[in-house]
Image 1 (spheres, rainbow, N blue to C red):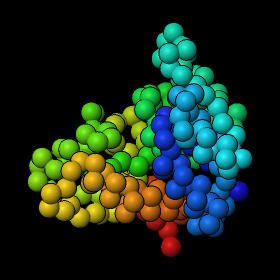
Image 2 (image 1 turned 180 degrees about the vertical axis):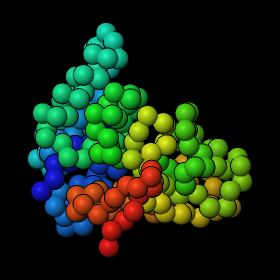
Image 3 (image 1 turned 90 degrees about the horizontal axis):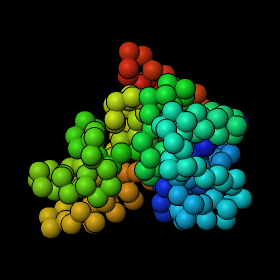
Length: 208
């Protein structure tokens, strides 16, 4: 049974998708051992407590330097015996020190089909605003490993979502979450927990 640590900052809708998948048996061989938040008021912490999941809070502003924060975050994650770390709306930058400490063990879901609309500055509603302003007809979500390059780690899963005529960024965001993010993030977690992801030359291979 692998220990999953989920890092959050806000409402925790992606966290809820993972919790539901664990409870429904869609994620096997894995349990959420802790939810770590950068914000003590995050509703994600309430979701965790309602499901009897341990929680912790670590704030960047409580540390004088990024190095001190990195060390504290690494120590906290290690104290939870984490096999897999999931970024579920974690709004604090993950540094190279952290990604190297947990190489190929941190995953993130991004609300576009990477390599489109990704990288520095592309997050939240901004991604959908850019997609609509470009006039794309299809968007989606990507689950990928996290490395030192923003949104640049090996891609695990992707799912396409149609863009509708007259979409607002808010409407598109909701559709991408419901049809893609909440589907492929739990699936990727299940694949990891069952040792079905292999990385060769920076590309993931999903084992049957």
